[in-house]
Amino acid sequence: MIFYNSIFFFILICSLLNLYLENQKYKNLINIIVLIVLVFFAGSRINIGGDWHNYLDQFKGFSEIGFPSVAIFKASDPFYILLNVISFELNWGLVGANYFCAFFFFLGAYLMLSRYKNFSFGILVNYLFLFLILSMGFTRQSLSVGFIYFFLYFFIEKKNIPALLCFLISLASHKTSAIFFVIFFSYIFIKNLINSNNYDIYKLIKLKKIWFIIFSILLFSFFFLYRDIERLIGVYIFSELDLHSSLRQQRTSPGLIYKYPIFIIISFVYYFFRDRLEFKNSREKNVFDIYFILIILPIPFSGFFSLLVDRVLIYSYFFVSLFLCKLINQDFISKKNMYYIFFISSFFSLFLLNFWLMYSNHSSYWLPYTNLYFSFN
Figure 1 (tube, rainbow, N blue to C red):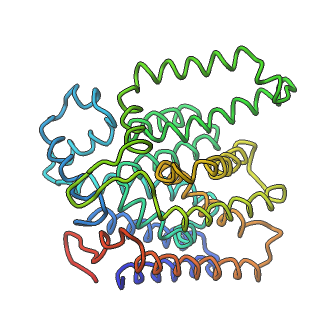
Figure 2 (cartoon, one colour; figure 1 turned 90 degrees about the vertical axis):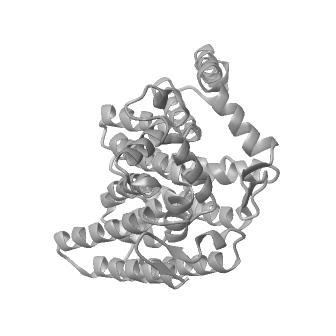
């Protein structure tokens, strides 16, 4: 616990410096230092996370593929496998693959949060979910999520070709990112259709064009993603699987009852301030609205299908950072209120961290922290 709290207070100091400093060059330097620290400690970890041995077994299997090989692109999650194979060929082991994933994940977050010049603060208020749980627990998902951040950045900047590339890489990193993109593109499509043709929801339901698109997507999924969808349904809805001798994949997620209300509260706070927030363009506003929908939509399924909702929620973790960084930069937020938001959210983040480390069912997989070079309690 000392290690995780030490990194937290280091980021806290960096965030405070960012608030007080006027020179943007110094602010950028501080944020880059925080970025390097996060990538280093997430990437160099050893035996950290509930799926560590599962990832290690997979790495050994991937090492037999070789590079270059067509077999990489025939497998599920080919980009993640490619990084593993490259790491093996460079003799970097699983740690090398983890470095790749941590780099893309935090660089994507840095790119998005730098829009609001608050990368350090964005990590601070979301420290538990972004640093511990996602970057050091869900390695493949973090890689996919990192490219979602790249995608969103290029989408907002209206750079469609780089956005498309990041969309494809995200899907090739972990198939569950398809859930995010289905909601994302469905929202964009329906909103554009309503705005351009003045359709109401009842007319939309009757449109043959929409049902043709839905049918085409389902048909595509059946032929090309059937094996992955079958496995996802088996893991998250019906089965209870042994992922490793020390970890059993259950159908329910007890931690959701503590985690989900936080994101629901943040989403409704966003909805309260939504009309007062200044957005760069309509695309940026769409991104915030889609995160809101992604958090609210799974509420009816959070009972029996809590594990599925828990995994979907991974793609919403970033919204806490995104919204709070956006909020403290608004003109209607006074400097005094900005400091209130800063210290209240930082204190709550610290409380969550220590509560999770002491009482979470799986926190023992993160304690003590060990990496290639040293070990902390």
